[in-house]
Length: 395
Image (cartoon, rainbow, N blue to C red):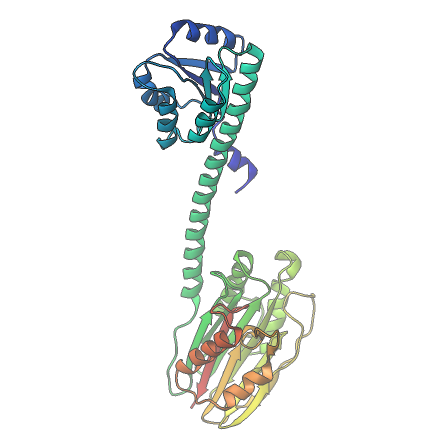
């Protein structure tokens, strides 16, 4: 919330004085004392039985309360003020005809803010009224600002929740065909993370899949992640053959230079599987290797390049790898293995590879079990980074 918005949310209160005293002469004398002060509005109540109602309706910034009144004791009124939800914080200046330490002590114990022997000097009375009113007005404005901030945070949380659900709606549904099967899990470390992924058929022979990881978290990273994901899903990069991973990374790099996107950059793995010759062409820009598993054999799938958006006119290399029948490819972000444990040691890429070698692919349950293990290692249900993993099975 900006300072201008916050200032607009608070009321510009004036000083409102309520005198509760049964003596008309005292009321007139106080009125005359305050008359020269143009920023002070004076009100009075001579009927003690109506003091609470009058104060609640008026909303004074300070109450001058006489102690000796017919029908209702002044100290009892102090107690009632402090018990009233609208008046419990209003400053109370008790007026008495005597300097009595015991009476003072009781008044303060019941919640009075000040004690004056009536009638005080005009200069002193005005000074005390201004002092207590200023403190109370500051309290009212602070409470209004907090309430405006709370409402703003609720609206922001609602918007972020909608944005989070939108991001999740962009992620692909699992695929199960004779050519390829997919399962995945995505758990952002905040409501809006920087990871996203997808896959689709380019034509009847080529199946593309990709995972990107924008630096940082929050709205900015999520917006860039969604924009980059849409470029890949819609194949909207100009003059790019989306069957050529190196061309895709080059096109993404030129379209998403960090200086044009708030200093943000991202890593990207992009692969294309040719179902006829069972060849996987792939390129990675600053991204962790994918892992191809065939039986108990694991192979790193990587073609090292710079991250996307760092430097213009960069040349990106791609590679190919055979995909034997029955292989599984694991595609993930670094949040799947860079997990800090309570002793400050790190779960590493090698640890992840060893874990995958010793587990059996069983639908999405395999990935869920991995996530649960990382939560256990981290000793906290929320990991430090987004958890994104896609497993592709090639029968």
